[in-house]
Length: 283
Length: 328
Image (cartoon, rainbow over all chains, first blue to last red; front, side, top):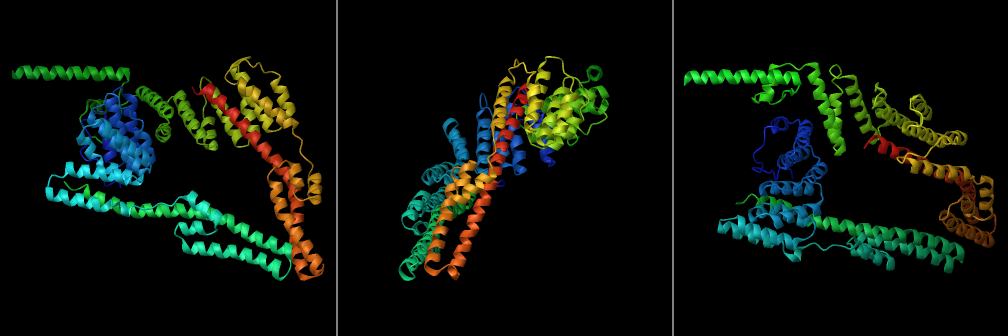
């Protein structure tokens, strides 16, 4: 993902104090470069310079595969008195770091701030990342609107634009949206009918296995009571088996509902990431 | 015109020389950039032309220490650790106070990342007895406490020279009293707190809190393992209830009583010497005896849990004022 949105052409004019840190970054000495950018923050009263330094430090942290630290670093930016371009760069980078750190709500929030406070050009530049973040928060309708607006605005060739718009329409067909499984519902179903929660999550064999175990417990009790006439033994053994697997089945149905939801989300979103990455390069 | 240019160049050269001489005197010389050596910034030219004097290096290190402090204050711990590690390599160029400061900050970072032996190593290298020496000794002693080396912690605190009735003296007594509690040396604790004045707001609440822990420890009477075992033999789970557990006894009953019922039923129907009774009787026997043993041991377990909780609270109350007093 780091290679997908490399922020080309964002950085503005820099003051001379960036020479050392920039050269260290270019030389791949990321830890030292990160320290030097922090030194710039320490030594300046100018919020513009400080914000630039924080942006550069975030780059170093991202290159060191520290997305969480990069996000935390970008959240230190104070947006008071900055130019639109630097606000955009900072918000966009924060959203990007948050996306990589899997903090999708934060990514959506940063893109929303761009939409609210910056001109349309900037809004469109962040549209693809915004759509990606919205996909992860399961707001596909909003993502579709965002991408359609972006295509209308950014793609000037009519043929290409129409093709992209139809591709977006095809991708975001509401009939194809994944249907999520509610773990609470799975829990309730398994409570009343053992195995039904697993069946609801789409795991047929799991459901069958649970049902067999439950039936075994009941069977042991029935054999004990009606066949061999060992009433207490039958009840204790039968109930022991039934109760153990009954509770385990409820827990497992919750787990399977969550697992199914995750798999459905990835199945739908992963191809979207690839397609959006390809579309973002079209002009 | 040409002559004017020559004069201008000469004049600028003179001004530049004057600036460099002034910078040498005021020791405001920057380090050269190791990577970007082709850039012709004034800073670099100065750095290349004038070798760093020892004094200027020390000023630079002082600035670096301020920077390290800024990094720690802003929770940039990775950066701070990297910088301090770099600074600690400059052995010959630093003054004693600077070396102490480097060790102090480095030790502090390690203490907060719970690398207690690393922190002890750094704090023990501090030689200054001035401003930095006292907090370092307190930090070193608490690191020993966390490493369960109470004697070493006490030795450090007892060797500390403090003014009479000063904050440091009262705080040292507080730390020593806390260690006495950790060692369950109640007489030692009593003799130390006799000297408390409770006049320092920085840790007076912890001093009072420590007395509550003391009361909890002194008033705690361990239950008898024999009685616990006996009660469990009478009725499964009763021993654990006596030991102080509330949920566990019912779990024990839930497991043992049905097995007892099964064993009785099998004995009544099939007879005592029948194979089903041997199986279910043995199963019940194992759980029954295991429960008696478990109840006897649970008396010690619950005592251990209580002590662990109190020890945790004592350590926490030792740490909080340390930070309040020495790291503001």
